Length: 171
Image (cartoon, rainbow, N blue to C red; front, side, top):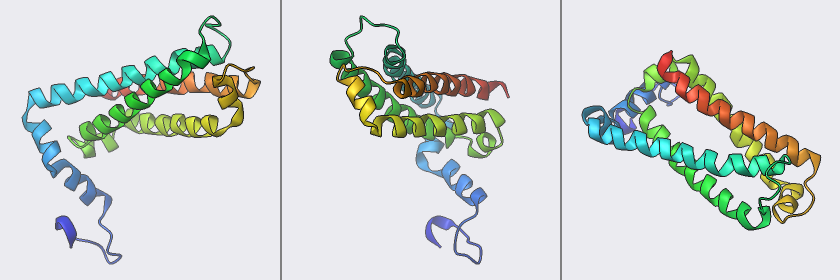
């Protein structure tokens, strides 16, 4: 069997075996043994979160009708790139941090809530950004009400992901 998995009759490793494997991969072991490494990966995760929220929140506020002096056609594309880079960093480092104690995290209701909220936030992005109304709004055209609703939902979801992430340590 690959990578030391003993599989059930289906040939698929169990969820617990996958979690054990994740906790034993060299990147997780390094973070488990080095407080300094953990510190830098955790700080990178926080930086990613800051970039996500720093890009998304001003964009969403503008789309819902606030920050009208904000030239969305000029600054909007930059904010989207910043948020995208932050999202990539937050997802990568978040997964890496998860591998340090995966069994504890999957048993934590706050972590599960964060994952669900994150899934909804990512789905909201996928739906919003595919629509022509969003692209038109980014070009400085009239912002349709559906774009405003998605922007308000985006703000609510991303802030909820943030709160759920902080909640993890308190459960």
